[in-house]
Image (cartoon, rainbow, N blue to C red; front, top):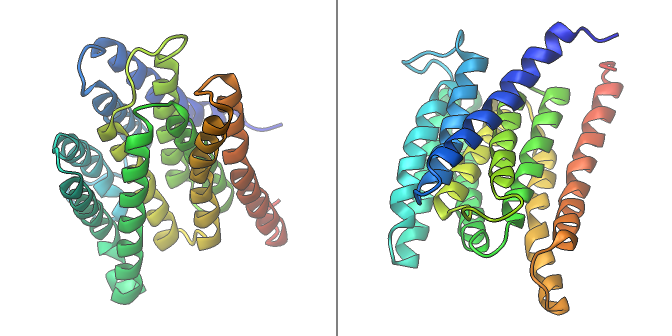
Length: 282
């Protein structure tokens, strides 16, 4: 029988705490436009210190030490970026902010992994974050499915990482999923506040940085990363079906988006379990 002394703290730190903090701040700041971004940031940072308080260094000694600063400065940067009226300026600023975050993440890998691998990972991650942020920031203004998809992908990434690579990064992906779940719960049964472009931005940025951490420092497979990102492609498919059916939203859209996003996520989990079994882990 599994030891509950391991699972209970993990559940409280990675699920209950970030969900509660994020939801409480969403209600407290519900009249503020910045509420979704600030609440998500606060929930993530609170859970981060609950999980890694004994390992964190104010003077960064490892890539994960940058995460609180990435969350706070990334949130402030995302809020400033989304207020700009020029679409071109927003895209450029999103890429610059993403590149700064990924460069900080890869800094500690320069010596051991080589500048070429780190630079390529940082550049590709920043480009992917910028593209996904740009698409989802617009999509989230009209429908809740982008938030749902990010939650499924972040939760799936957390589970795969717990099975395959890193407990710490896996827990933090779970934290992000819990914060996003709080955003969904806040808008049920009626929409109180749409998920803002800034909130989408910080969620995508944190997910990108976490997956880059996993790839560079925990041996996370690029195939897993590609499959997880493919889960986000469900939104344009669902949107296209809704336009064909001349319907928007509803339980059918939620179910379709969840199912489409879950397919690559479940494939990734299955591959991780298979790899662990072949390595003698299970």
